[in-house]
Length: 208
Image (cartoon, rainbow, N blue to C red; front, top):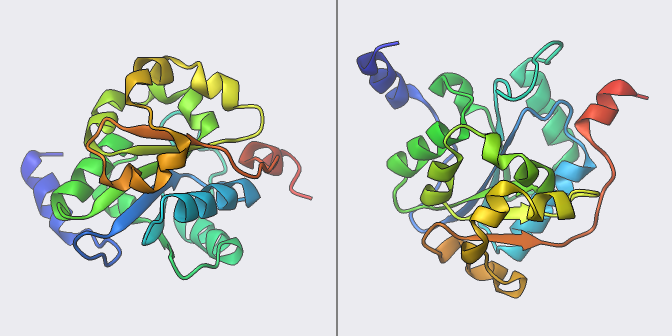
């Protein structure tokens, strides 16, 4: 794809409405299927970071996972909206039109389109454990603050991961969570919360 084609297509990408100065959490994933653990992460970040919105960014496919049997984006959006009803939560699949499954490209697009919006990347501790494998992960940390929400069995692997150790100096105190959206990156925080043992992998293996 040429640069010109990418530039033209970016203009046609429709993102959720947002206003200058809004604090917006971005929670990306394939959500196959969405579950209570995702809801805990979303609600915890909304409350603790005092966000104005939390976007569930449904990716066309996680680059680090196989896509066999991945339901259509529309089906996954329906599943999210069935379990995550909240006036401040928005489900979006604009990455499909943007033409990239990579978080770094998505964030760069968003902060270019909405330069006055205070975006925060939100992820579970399980993602922090493998964050160093993400494409351009250091660029992500340089573009937006990051909130990491605890997940069962992942606190130690997450906090001892290569990414967490590399960013140790940029970690904020948990009691200062409400200030995270206003921090200049790199800045990140680890939030403890109620834990849910549900996982997408387990649910796919045993849908009953």
